[in-house]
Length: 351
Ligand code: ATP
Image 1: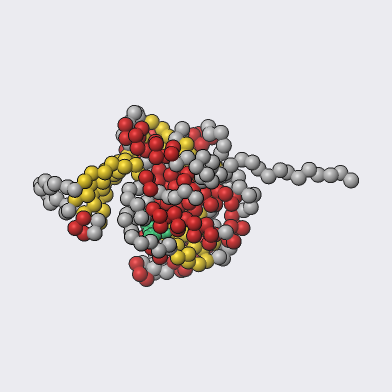
Image 2: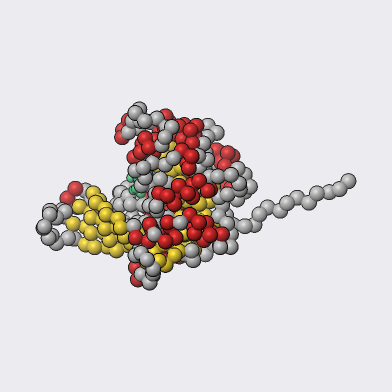
C-alpha cells in the first residue's frame, strides 16, 4: 500500500503589514487656550512620534517579542513621510525599529511633508485635547495609490497574512484596499479600525467579508449610521449604547467575522459570526495618566494574536475558543498604555 508523507507544518513566521499614517505630534500643554489675537505663555512643548498606523505598528511589533531579541510575528509598516525629515530620522524611525517594525517600505516623499498633529492640552479642563492634523505624506504619493501599495507589498520577501487598516489615509485608498483584500482568492485577512470614521461612510460592498472590525463607542455608532443597509434612526449612543444589538448587524449585513467594540475603562465587547459574544472587563489601573493610543495598542496586540492563530493553519471561524484570551491580553497592554504619557513611545508592554 502506498504511504503518504504528511505535509510538515509551515515554518514561515506570520507576517502583518500595517498600511497607515505616520505623524509627528507637537503637544503643547497650557493652562488655558488663547483667545483670538491673544498670546499666552504655555507650560511645555513635547514633540513625539505618532499617527494611528505607526502606533498600531509599534504595538504589533512589541507584542511579537518572545524575548528581547526574538519575534514570533514579522511586522512591517507601509507608510510615507517627507524626504530627509529629521523628525522621521530621530523619532519615528527609531520608535518603529526598536519595536521590531521593518521600515523598508516607508516612502520618502519628495512632494509632501511628514504628517503632523498640533495638539493643545488644556490643563484647566482636565487635560482635554484640541487637535489639528496636517496629513501631508499620509494623503499623497504611495498612500494615494492602491496599485503602488499592492506593488510595495509584493516586493517584500513574504506576503502578509494580515493587513491592518485605519482611517487616516485617503478614503479612496482605504476602500480600494478593503475591496481587494476582502475579495475572492487567498488574500491577507483584514483587521480594520475605522478611526476616524470617514464622514462619507463606507459602502457595504467594501466592508463585506472583513475579518476583524474594531471600533470604539463613538465609531460603532458612526459606522452603523453611515453604512447603507445598516439601521439608521434607532442607534442609541453614550450610556445607552447597545453593542449586543449593533454587532449582529455587522455580521449579518457585512459578513464581518469578528466585531470588537472597545468601551474605554469598561473593557471590550466581542462578537463572532459563529455566535460567541461577551464582555472582557478592562484592567483596573491605579492612575490614568494619558489615554492617547490606548485603542491603537489594543488593535496592535489583537492583530498579532490573530496572526499567530492563523499560522497554526486553522481558519478564523475556529478562533472562538481563543478570543477571550486574545482580548484579555490586548486589554492588559492597553491598560499599561494609559498609565504612560505620549503616543508611540509607550504603546504596549513586553510580553
Ligand atoms: P484612544 O482614542 O484613547 O486611543 P479609543 O477611544 O480608540 O482610545 P477606548 O475604548 O477608549 O478606545 O480604549 C481602548 C482600550 O484601552 C479599552 O478597551 C481598554 O482595554 C483600554 N483602556 C482605555 N481606557 C482605560 C482605562 N481608563 N483603564 C484601563 N484600560 C483602559
